Image 1 (cartoon, one colour):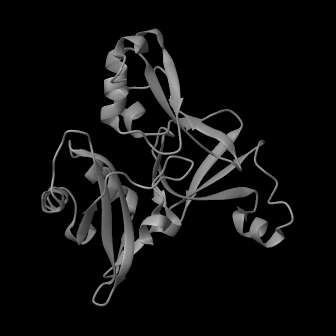
Image 2 (image 1 turned 90 degrees about the vertical axis):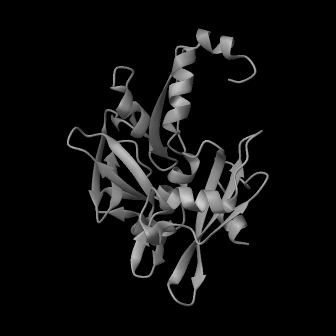
Length: 225
């Protein structure tokens, strides 16, 4: 996009998955030509939802769209569950894991989600990544979204670490965009002005780049070290 923005004018549309793309990125791409659509799916389910070309811009930028044909969605205890004709029947040779993954014929995705009255899906985090800070549940993805909204931040990852007083505390790792500057103190202040105090990381470590999984998401296990 930075090297040859004129080349994007020949692309009409595309799909993005794995993590919700920042709205600012989608807006920049659309200004250059292509309309990029968020979709959602897992290895066990295939593509479950997708935004449509004629969806309003605010929904294309903040949701994963609505279910594609043959799939149903529901949220149970905050967790997204999926039912449809193309789900995996289970994990080969792992009956216990298969039993845990299904509630009747609904597949438990492990993703925390919201579905609005029009059927649009929003993924808010992973159930196993929730951090318990002083009796409050914090979804790292929410804190990461705030950090990434800072104009100097390229990528961010938030993890929970043991804390004698709070039980767990938040620690963030951030990489900055090229030719920008920001200090950890600035980023903490920026975060504190936008979310509740218990969601603010107690420390932010600036790294040249974050370790990534093959999916392109930050490798939290490597950061936890």
